[in-house]
Length: 330
Image (cartoon, rainbow, N blue to C red; front, top):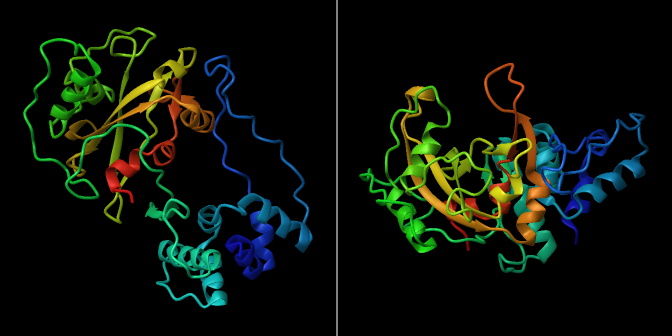
């Protein structure tokens, strides 16, 4: 039984009509040839806001979320979740995140007839930021972990190589040594931690339009923080390039250094940070699909800036497997 269609039937007409005209989230598309044809499509024009009849509204909702139970539950309000749980006889804590998790469990049992199914066929979502998130399995290299979610590593002394690493193995060994190194007070330069993290690998800013290490591997930091669930989540969209630069070259082979702020009370320029882990991700058809979906542009710099940067939306890291290397996977 399709769980989404079953649940949509239990929703009120008002809820179904609201969902039927809910706009899909869109990122600001990349202008020009920066993505060589990979820019996401332009958002559709405003369509009719007339009241849909029940059958049309139901059909639209099922067409949009028919294979995405997590997406449907994430789109429902607290009141709609509560009413749905009551209609289905699902007992759960009254908070929206717990209702979503309990309703997903109910839907999963509906679709399997109560039989156990491999996580490969029915991956289990986690709660991050109150939303159900499917963490794709890792598709790149990463360091081992003693337990999941990863613990903040103990402080380690900086041990950068004497010069630029000769081989990829040398580069990854330097990344291993960077785990636990404290990056110090950031100061006013928001890019300071990224430069210090790259320097731990023997890589220094050259300002060239090619990947950082020998034109082959781009080194980027990605900031993470603890979710109330105890798991890690990406807290900011990392910048990839400036508009007009070859953004795709930065993603062909990327070494992501996972950065965590240590003293949340300090925040901003007074905070300290550390390297939590790393993830080497290589370009393939799957990464190309994710780039098409998640690369977007927005102003980069202080208020009133005219500079435009190309950013990678944080949801990329769930779909590309990085979150699974921090939180665990089957």
